[in-house]
Amino acid sequence: MTENDPICPLCLRPIPEGVPQSLHHLIPKLRGGKGGPTVLMHHICHKEVHATLSEADLARTWNTPEALRAHPRLAKFAA
Image (cartoon, rainbow, N blue to C red; front, side, top):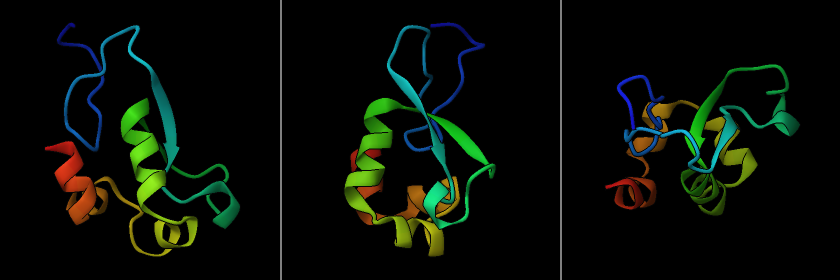
């Protein structure tokens, strides 16, 4: 882990090199987010986002890192 490691926008922890990671489209590609903003997340955090919320909910309401952190289940997961 180094001070230059990216920070996961869900759990706010560093993402060290070699740790599974993935890009999350803040607005799902199938809901108009193709080419839109993405954030780098721990793969496990990304999986939890998609296990918790539908693509419609992600596009409509939960489409910022701040909103994702405010979701009750995701907040508990990330704590």
